[in-house]
Length: 223
Image (cartoon, rainbow, N blue to C red; front, side, top):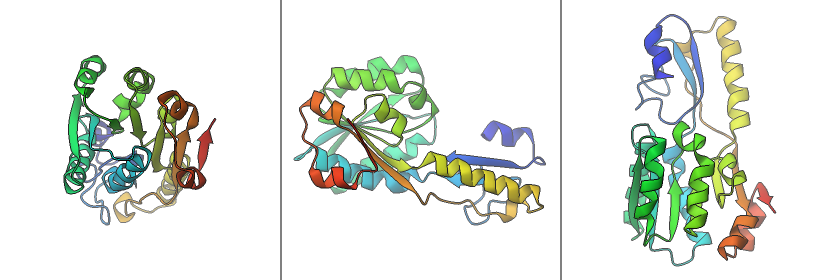
């Protein structure tokens, strides 16, 4: 998306799911994007606390976990947020840093000692979700994701924005622009619908008992 912005300052651009549109240089601010770009932010850093809370519910007595992230993208900001939250909760958080597909297998060698894995979303991670989940299952580690596709691939659970809703709303923003509104006058919007998905097949494979209270609040349970 940043490449598209660099290519033109005239053609309107709408993004549907940016991790950090301000930090990533897409817009000047959420309220006043400026320029020719606007869209929707997935607010991953804001949701990090909820994801960590859910992970602790599934792994009682959690003390040490690892964070997997592509540190060459906005996922680095989420990694830092999770690390900061872990420190406040008295948890140890190791980092598994990747920049390309070839880094994933070596990164898992550093998973030893961690009781769970927090996976930060970005396109590289999404493209390699089956590989990541396979390594995690082989290591018998509980995983937290932000996208249902990772749970459908075998991850334990996810909590994050409903992407179908985000893309629908992105189309509405594009319609506003086509009707004459300038992108600079359209504030960047935030998610309003969120999904909690739990994979009970994976839970059983790991020997985990997911609390009934958590299952009752889940939007989908894969059995």
